[in-house]
Amino acid sequence: MQSNLFFESALAKTKVTSAKVKSRELLIGYFLGPFLALLSNAIFGAYLNRYYSDVIGWTDASRFGIFSAVIPIVSVIFVILGNLFVGRLIDRTRTSQGKARPYLLISAPLLVIAIAFLFLTPTTLSPMVQMVWIGISYNLYYAIAFPFFYTAHSSMVALSTRNSNDRGKLATFSNASGVAAIGIGGSILVPIFLQGYLFVSQNGVIDRVASYNNWRIMMVALCIITFFAILLEYFFTRERITEENVKLAITEDKISMKKQIQGCVSSPYWWLIIAYFLLFQFGGLVKNGSMSYYSRWMFDSVTDEASAGFAMGMLGLIGGVPIAIGMLVAWPIANKLGKRNAVLYGMVISVIGGLVSFIDVNNLIIVSAGLVLKGIGAVPAMYVTLALLSDVLDHLEAKNGFRSDGFTMSVYGSIMVGLMGLGSGIINALLTASGYDPTATVQSGSVQSVLAFAFLGFELICYAGIVLLMFFLKVEKHVEEDQKKIVAFQKERVLSSGGEWIEPEERLRLEEEEAEREAKVLREKKNASKSKNK
Image 1 (cartoon, rainbow, N blue to C red):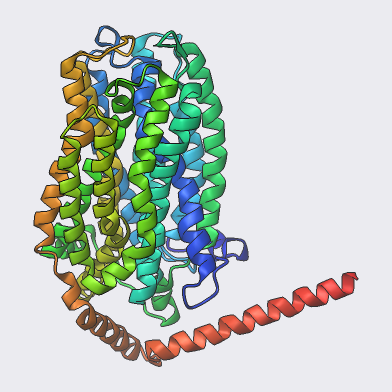
Image 2 (tube, rainbow, N blue to C red):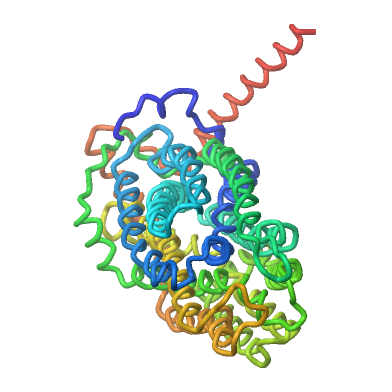
């Protein structure tokens, strides 16, 4: 998509005109839009596997065999390929609206179609037909539609500005949107207010027909919310770094995939940040995917879906409050300690919190206390690591002479999305092997052990691994030097092509003045129109 007339038209133009990051961009483009857009995926992370197991019945070995364990794991291959494909498209795209943002807009109708297909599984047909439908619809969402959105969405912080302070704000709000979608949507509001509606229970047994019909209504609501939310993110974001080369009349060389990969994998910092995201996401996905099971079967006070939803909402609220408050302090802490140190010390606190929960895995108060400590420790990891990733991408640009956003963010997207399938497969395999029975009133000891490991133990192990990784991720010491090298590269290319070089600070000042002039003209036109109408 080197030249696309639609994205060059006024209709596709961003609503963000300021050269600097301002509150409207932060609040709408990086929080509200992404929060609503990610809400459906957060709900799927918490409930899709349980929808398949308890409503469709795919952990029933007599009907589906090992399908429930195999299909999410096999689908990881297609998810990775899908993310790599979108990342490559981003690398090869240049429009006045950026290289990643166009794919946000393209993803909106794709996601609506994919969400609908997830919940239209024909329950009256044979298990074989259902398995084929689930396999296709699952991959339509996770391997095609969601990568178009998520790879582009994840690229925005690194492409929006080179200003370190503004980038930190954007990273905080962007991560906060995802945290809020999971914490508020998937772990609090839906469990408390909708779990009994989505999993209709009669005498402790799921009414599959009623539940299936209610999920279809939920599907319509999620399709509408997701579509309009993506429009908000698209129109209230801007790729200032991509625009640099356009404004400087720099013709970017087409970098081969091989060269992109070589440029990334040759840096130990790239491996460390990718390993961090892998461990952090994997632990969180297994925990979130098992949360509804844990809430339903691990506490003696829980006897039906309504009380299970309330317990899950309480766990989400208790664990989420420190993370929500942490949004206000994450960046000040990172500025004082450094981004890497903030994450390192925080993960140590989270490991301690994970150990506290194991004092009594059936006691809601003790488990909640551990989750609070874990949430406090996870604050820096939740909010500043996209900024840390942006530092790594700048370091790669300074080292290699070209940016590696497309490939890196496709790997990032593969981790964030693909691990969901792997996590679901692991949970399903453990549940099936331990004898999980959704029609039972009490689960066996082996099932409860599996749930304790999935909800509490797996993430604890991942966090301990992150503590080790952070000792070596020292990319921040190169930031100042990297920025000088990048500016030197740009200056050399502009002068060699016969252009006029303007220092970045002066370009920013001139652009801001132009934006203010345009805004003034627009205001005067509106006022004149109002006066005329009067």
